[in-house]
Length: 371
Image (cartoon, rainbow, N blue to C red):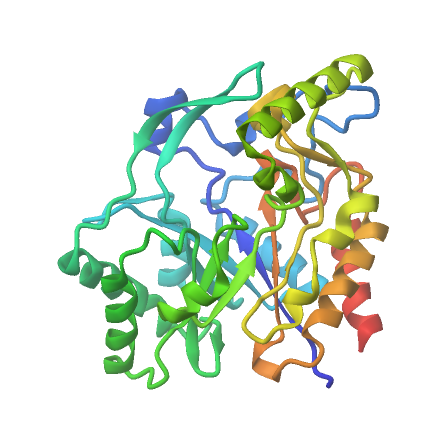
């Protein structure tokens, strides 16, 4: 089968101050705060990551969003999937950027939404590898009235002619599909049909743990799933039991101490092939590609990171994903790109001082070569 794959990139609409962050972290805090103060933890560790073409941008500026869209088009990306935060009873966070995109009609670049339905915590990564956390804002599901209020917001986005659809269904990803009450799934679908989308919603479940089963989610009404295998590269740990995991933590810690390197380092050159599997060839599975990853700006020594994540290796990774979707129906040749601009996690496509347009060109080249 031919036709281009549909690459959709997750997009973080942060990078500007907002009141809650000012209260929690100090006035003027943005994602750039962690990015800028990051330090190298071993020889050759690329930190801090420094943006190139777009600089340390403020997403409240429309010109920045236009420039991002132009770069994404150049890479062969079909659209952005904006992370959307709805905590219940109309409470949203980081809402201004997408709202302005929706209201202004600019940039003229396709988009969809991913509901990041999880609570926010202030986390501290401890020296023993554990994480302590303080609740900042809780994700709630108040019920039918909240579901309708939320859907009324969603339908305004769905009806925008830029909104991405699959078989005429608006695409909506759910970050935590397990905790989402069934009443939301059922009524979102019903209300979408009543609003004129006769096929309902293309609902995608994000799977972050090996114990979550695709079949269970499909039976609840999800159309497809995507596996976030960053969390499952180490999936063998899930089968080790508490004692085994504890012993592994000690081993990793000692190894990190001896080598003077953080314990959660993975070689992208050797591990990228684990990010796409035979499961991704199934029609109801959307493969996910990851250009690079380094969580240490947020979590320090105990953060996970890739080394050797170069554009050339990413090119091979993209080809694996293209193989996975090749035989799928044209509308469903979807590849999710994690992510366009998660700088605080070292997980981005945008140009930096080391690689320039390298990852953008690698994606473009992979798509063109595959044709």
